Length: 583
Image 1: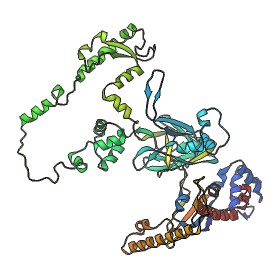
Image 2 (image 1 turned 90 degrees about the vertical axis):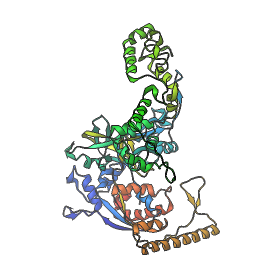
Image 3 (image 1 turned 135 degrees about the horizontal axis):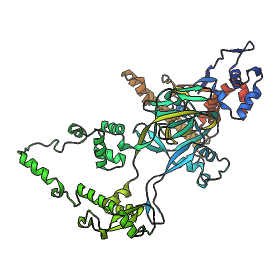
Image 4 (image 1 turned 180 degrees about the vertical axis):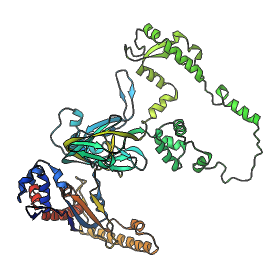
């Protein structure tokens, strides 16, 4: 493991004929409202800003370091941070499917949306002061939050799915802006907060062309943002994507959690019906590989007419009864015309649950599909409330089975136009870390991402394999390991590392000799292979990184790297380090 300094922001201005140091530049920016107070002593100023969480001034100076470590540790360093949002922003969870009963003995199934303010998540995650007010939030613990299903947009499947929270951060006070969409959705965030747009992920300031005139904010370009969401089967883009994967109508229906005929309907609406050639691409021919037979079937126009007649109405071999559409329309018009009379006859009281008033429906006691002769019989009509009417119809036929199996429609992104933006002042903002490869989730019904990418990586040629000292897993703490293994186990692990490293390097070199690109051959290398990273971030970002990664809960190898960065940081920013209590 090696850590070395590459660069630090070099101020280009002077104060009182003296060049500014990087920390002097931070202090210079902090005194923007009172430049006449410039003094060489700025330790009290920086200490004041840190104690009062005025972190924005520490974003004015950057530091870049070079790190040589193993591929096993590099992903931990490169892990994305998600976004910077106002504390009142609500994060969306889905509670497990459940069945509940109300006082009318009616059951409710499917996912249940649960919204929690990110400020409350932060307090409960770090076990801070108890929350008063919402009892359900006050009872939440870090373990419960980590197990809850947070909504995430999967960029590969183009649909909303679930993941879990890995960490919750507070990022101090920053300048924030309120974004409002055409449908009324609002969110408050920093200007570098990333949103999903039709062109990909973009910071707010780039997506809308943010312009500032004092404290007045305006947008200079039209922009659409991704929100949560519409059923996937209604999205033309989602249907096209699944067609490209050669998925059948049935497979698409199963993925969307809707019926086969619903998918056919929306394919027709978007003009995406399957051609015979497309069907052949995903459907194996029934007679593939069969030989030695032939047919002399000849279909005449008479045959075709008979087939058409046999497939219509009651003549169809699949006919199970029912009525024609025109007849159903007449029944609908009739029941609407006599609704007031039927409800008055029953004193505007549901004849199933006994509740009076509310939204009432006219109901056929004997179903029209089974007894069309009683469709216009006044004695066959009764009054039901809306819930009871739906419940009774759900009990009949296949509808009940479908509703019991239905888990709710799968959702995909919905594009909504940005209506306005305004400056919302200085606010305390928070971050989340989500355990999903797409690094996003839903907040205030917006699909949000990390506000900026802090670190970058470059792979060097595979030159060495790092040796790891084995440690025993702590049975009481999954994040901890103990250095107390016996010598025989340590020796076995060393030999295993050497054996794997030799085999991998030999195959890697062989792949290069065969002309395979390094970016492809690298997949053969073990996680212990050394790689080189260049990490660049503002002083504020480095403070956050060091506070998290020097903690005892961090893996030892990563903690050693953070310790090396800490030494560099203290040498370059001694005043800030003392204010943080790091010296």
